[in-house]
Image 1: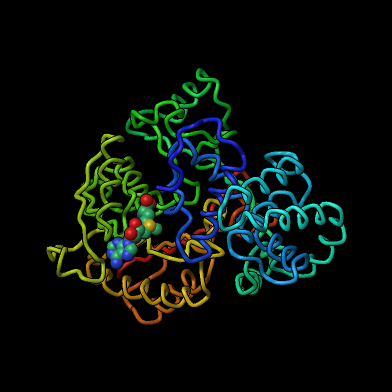
Image 2: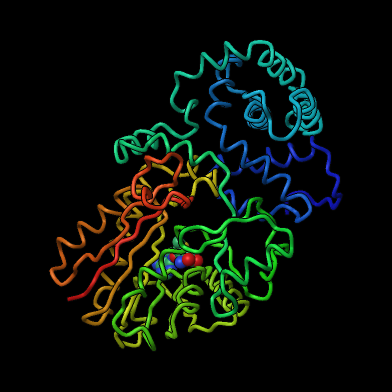
Length: 441
Ligand SMILES: C[S@@+](CC[C@H](N)C(=O)[O-])C[C@H]1O[C@@H](n2cnc3c(N)ncnc32)[C@H](O)[C@@H]1O
């Protein structure tokens, strides 16, 4: 457990100190989500807010640090320095005024055994930054990593693959995502739930697909009706999966559906809310599979939850064909960087190729399990073409019995009206996603 304190009025220096540990662990390759889960419940919201803001500004912070230090400081000092720079470089910190931040960053260093000898150095660096801000910002703006706050390879790839909207994508990844809800239509309608939100004085708007955007995000325990399964939290792009797979299906009752890669069960629940179907929810990770069951119980729904590896189908498949398959494949998660801002710093470009190979293998294994006339919906929360359009083009080239039905393709988050594929739906604020609906001839 990181932390160990239960003081709700946690001093800022302590939050910076914990954030520094989180940042260092992620620099060594750990996932931000996993590391933040180790923080005490009382401390997590504050530390997470700081860490998210740091990851959204880390490219700039590291570039400024390189200019103002002669050589790379020791890791504890460096992470506190980069945290402070990330939070103050714009001069309009969301959190605290910059002198408080500098003061508390220095305090965090003084109270960290590995950094305390360098507290004066840290103070000098940060004061110099404040004095020379315009020059230092100008000097680092020519560096794309500093300017866009993404790794260089990522910027190049997005530019090449989405030439019309690459700036939108990179800027969108640095914005706070909306909190989006899906109404459980088995328990209530969007109109009924809207009335409940009004009664609870929760400001919201309803999107084009009946998704609900809360004006201000809040913990799930404070969302009206969440505990009793009236709604789920799910991004608007993820809410497209169930209607894409089910709408227009010749027989929509009693379908046998495989939800491969199902945890935590967001899309499983949506399928069951929309149709009377038999869903097998398959998941490799036992701990994550428990969350499918919990989520379905909350929603009052039921599926067969199976623990297994898609690629080792002899372990879990009974040989009966499915009417429909949803493959929400493991991917780089490059489309949900706004929700997980650490991801861009964790991924390596080589991850794309290895994940694309796994996705290809999964498609090959699952296709024979689908009956003729059935449908497979392939999706990833990635904006990279190798995990989306490229993957499906290769699949279609090798499977003459597969036909691509009308599919959204790559979705990117909307930031300007010009954004691709969401022109007809300007109220949507999507995560980056890819969808292809395949029909088996
Ligand atoms: C993108 S997430 C799925 C999200 C889920 N469909 C939802 O809407 O809530 C991918 C999931 O695939 C699981 N997974 C990864 N490799 C797998 C494999 N070989 N077989 C089965 N599941 C796998 C991961 O543990 C992860 O839970």
